[in-house]
Length: 386
Ligand SMILES: [Zn+2]
Image (cartoon, rainbow, N blue to C red):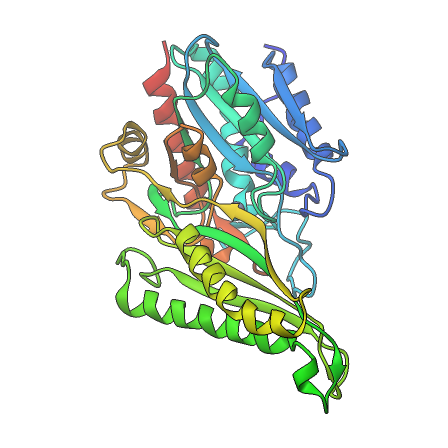
């Protein structure tokens, strides 16, 4: 065999060594994986972003005429800016039975374990293929996986099911909330602040809209729909930024604000935006009485659909069996799983490490979690081998 073998821990160290903060290129890491697979005679396909600065990697081990089990992970990590680390975040360090480094749990360890197991997959030969999908720009809105899914959709054969290795302490998660980010632009009319009746105050209108969002959020909190497995167990709405106006004595012409809806799977975020748009329409006559040009516009910034996979789905049963976990959970963070599910590939989230360590200084994955992830992949190989 021509390829080089890595232990999982060695491979985790190699992957952490690439600074793949979302704003940077991930190509060095992707090319390292491609070359590693190449030496094991596994072909990879790269799906680039528009500027060819970043790429997703897709590969199949085993037969290519049937759909198999997709192991999916994002290669990008969140920034270390203003974080106080005890060791170099891009140099894996083992201490206290854990591996420290940016991406240790979110989520290079899962990718590394899958890669380290490639020689064993090849040695046995597989009846059902194992696919890899390693993506870019997950942390900034699940951007990279979208063009990859477009490519997969047009294939005669696509993965039958998908396991997303985000950190769940190796417990299969069947659901997460959806996320919808919107920007609202309010366009009013400037006037001297002594002549308010000749102006259209854009901040006033924006404030009414923000309060309306707050009212909807209160209703969700008290009336649901509820799902007790989420924290909190209802849809949330949060206004994140607001900008407008130029001086205290000018009726402001412009105001804009950003807000985010995180919906439980059984709730419809579209209905919430429709309700807000309806309310906006009710504000317009008064504004347009003063200026015909007054307007309120909404701009969709990013949508990540909720994930909700039925307990009796094949992928859930498989993940339960491979992990040895005695139950499933639901997670509060979004993943690429909602997009895979939307594309007809049933998904669960199951990976090493805890989300409590993600995005923080001194991010780590416990060595025991790495071992559990190895067991998971070993059992998968056992299941699909010849
Ligand atoms: Zn992640």
